[in-house]
Length: 487
Image 1 (cartoon, rainbow, N blue to C red):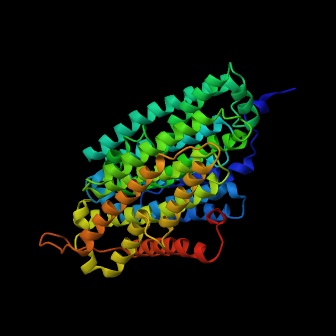
Image 2: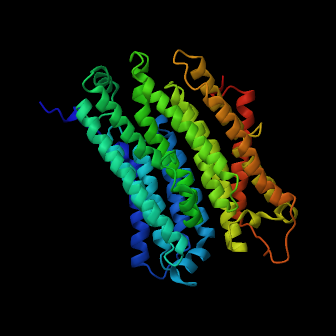
Image 3: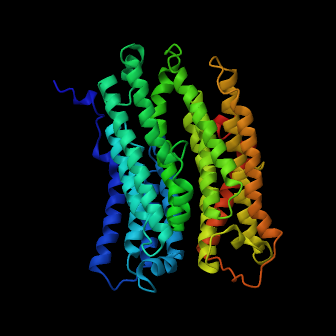
């Protein structure tokens, strides 16, 4: 009798239909670029965005495991729309002028990475998890260093490649130790509890978790695997920075949930054996919060600021995992939705400012409140949500994070008491550096050398949709109990 099902999870082709469609869509765009050279390349991001949207709609009626995949598809769609508006910068940085060389690949790579994220949502073992993560990572290598005429983009690609290779090594080493300790690649509570309860295998199993977590921490930007984020976000093309900040992070947290959920199931019967894991997660969360939020304070480049912001928010989401509670999945999803809406909107604004004013410093926002009051209000909603202003989705997301820590503090494990003041300080720091951007918009006036800014209709539509999501998620759950985790 075959025992292969004890090593890797059985899969069906139907599970990966969305993945196959996304990969096929990317290949169609690449082939069209070769076979139909006279077609304008500007339609490729629009076709890609429409295809990703259809795939996301096809996953709506499936079970809840696809929610993260749908969120990743939505983020990828926005990034592709951003590519459409950003195409003049792409042409100048790749073809050296108005030539459309390289535009098809620039639209296909995010779709391939999105396919990897959707595949993670169906993974049940470390083999599929590793393959899916590598599909995301390999595509991201090419995307980060795509502007070969831009030294910053090349530097971003090299840094991402080197640190990504290190994280892959950690992941492979963790998978090897995991198999040696449990006898399986399956992320199953049965095998993991057996290894945890065996004094001869327990150390190897905990070491496997540490190695696997290091590989996953690279994707979510958690300490100590966070060092690539500010430089890569600044050097990479802005649509790619947005993809790495949102879609790729969704995939990373989905991978983290696959590792954590078996621990949630065995925590109550483990007899305190998982206490070191919880302590380690608390330390990592605290370090990530401090590095992200305090590191963002002196930043003047908006993409670097959003990079440190991404690290800080990863720390708030990691708090959900400390107590190994069953609410970790819905809480994480809610936080990621709130974070994605605001972050994508701000990256879209940065891309428009790069096109119009030629740089991405916070000073590019100068005077927008006077020249574009409606758009500035929409930008302010996104900034307020990331800061955690009440009646925004960001406020409820951070409330869930604090609430999860309080439950951990008052539970039998008594963990995280020292983490509360760290979270308070970091949440307060967020108000300073986010409102620094608002000060540039409303308190500073345009200078003589500032070029006029024009926001495309697509950008305005994305900002409006993001603001509606932020305000609805920040108010409706307070009136109607539509999100059980809040009550």
